[in-house]
Length: 314
Length: 291
Picture 1 (cartoon, rainbow over the protein chains, first blue to last red):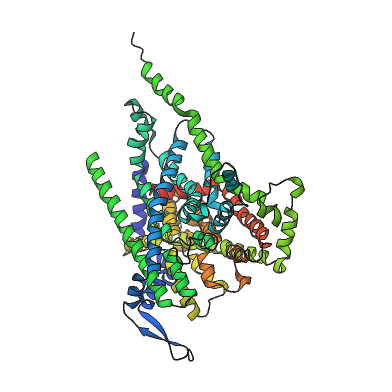
Picture 2: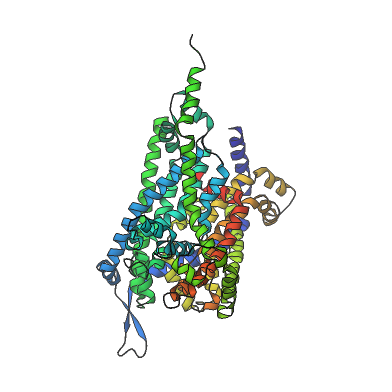
């Protein structure tokens, strides 16, 4: 408590004294702001601009092509294209399965690791985190081999046991498993860190009140790390909407994964296989808008909930 | 005869009987799930094409790791190692510069007061949420207009932007740099930038390493941006190179061991970094989670 007060007063003293000398902050902020503008803000603006134009090839294709303003034409083209809508349907299914499964497992593992019964915590933390060190493309390659009958010891063992394991015939399960493998340990570490930050007195109080380990987990620990849950949920959602690498690797091996299996793959094929930049830009913008809308909803919900909670505790 | 120790005893005993083995057993199972694919990669990298595709278990007489490495060196005049160097350059130099840029910005946000500061910081936080793949395509078109598409810069420059790193840096500067120290430096007559360079940057070094590690991983793992930007395979990072080889495997099965052995080598630096720098990635994930 006293440390906290010291910290705020001292930092305030610094800020007050340093007001008016704008040279240093400008110099320190400039590199980031320039790069951020060039590589994030301008591209977003340019994508919106591009999405309003269509390329028209003149005559027989001689003399290049001209850009024609088509207003929202590219958006209506994307939104009426079955391939694009199917991509969104796939990603929606993927999010509905993947997010609860992955977040649930990482939370469960974090609670197990945080319980007084767990041994060798450092080892488990490192071992569970390790898939994060594997590039997404290599993770997808490894699992693609592990899905392929003949190459995979897992599939061969399952087949020998009499089950007809055909993971490649179920693209959703195949992709969810790869993503869960990559991210469960990473998010487990985040939850574990948050659990470790819970004051021990709170947990002791729960035990004194007669709460068992399960009750403590559900009524004390999980509510107290809600901020981390929201943050992980938010980042997972943004990442899930951008799904590209894993299905791209499975495309060609798993028959169900088409070249437009996710909205991002759709945009990629539109741009680089058909040269239809207007359509590709429009679908990227639509994806970004959906991401922004969902992030807004998630942060709103979590904020109103935590507001209610602080009122109750007061 | 009410014994005061009874409640404590029941509290202590219940979890022990409940699940000591269950808890650790579940953790072991999860570990098997996370480590087994890596174990498979380790054995598969030592198999030749035939054994790999038929799924023969690895035995000493089927040990072909050396041979696979020789193939890796020989294929296309050792282009794999060129990709490897490219990746080290993109990720090493990129993450170093990126961490510096982030710490500069994070320090400025934490230490100074200026007009519109929190609004600007809000913009940075929004930047965290922008899907990076949504900006890759317009970036490609912009890069082709200024003529840097299919060059080193097309992949290098965008990887310097890491809004979450600025957020982390601000959190770390708040935690590691006491205001009194900066004040003392100022009293001694050190200029603002001098203070940052010789005091602030040094004190926040653990945070610097954390941001570096996260961005190194992100750049090393990045696939979409190089895929969009690069067509000259001498500029490829490892991820894109392995992808291009993987697309060959359908026609040429002899690429399979190259992809597998190449994947193993590409995983090693990050595994080593994460084992060696445990404190730093844990610090980053903690700072991100407590908020």
